[in-house]
Length: 244
Image 1 (cartoon, rainbow, N blue to C red):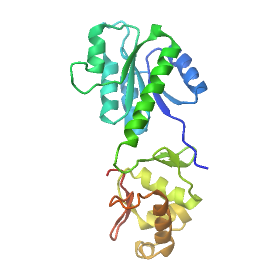
Image 2: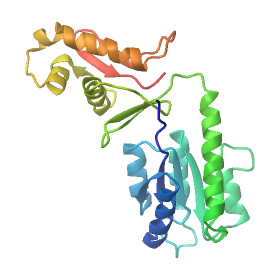
Image 3: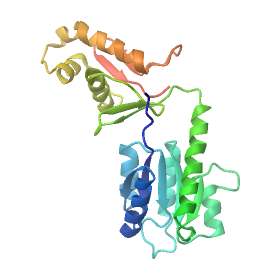
Image 4: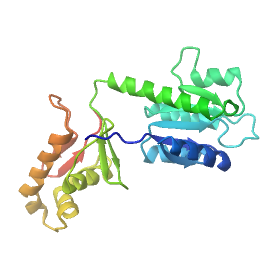
């Protein structure tokens, strides 16, 4: 039976007590939560990991600075990565709402702006609506589905659905993921998968690897599409191609 992974949320707030309280609530609601206590930490985690949603405190750098809207930069980065974002603030104003939601016609930085005084249920409702809208948008997207991987649990999902992989198929994809779009040589893959050190010439002709790649592609490729997730690079190896 196919399982859908829990949604991953990046909670960016400079108040550790608030993060602890909200993180505990979100975990109880079934979310996987990663915390960030500063704009720099939030941006680093966005660059390194994949998230379904970002909750960004507006004054993420300094609550006492009336001009601090550093959370908006996090929202802007998330938006650029195609990740939904909700701005959370204790200092709401009409102008800030306009800036976050870009109500004057420009592309919004965030899907919603919630005040901390609204209470946890208002935030949970906003999260549910935002994630539901994101899912509806993805279902209407004709681009190839994205692959995601959980290195800790050694699981791979395609379009949010768990892919049934053998041990060697998972190792193959993990090695390709870790190359971040770069080419993984035949010899590197054989060493990682089978624990054998072989020459480049022998690795290129190893039928085990070719058969493993073919079987893995059967499970993740989009039938009828020209796009290939596992792309062969002649004479060099394979690379993971997540872009359409």
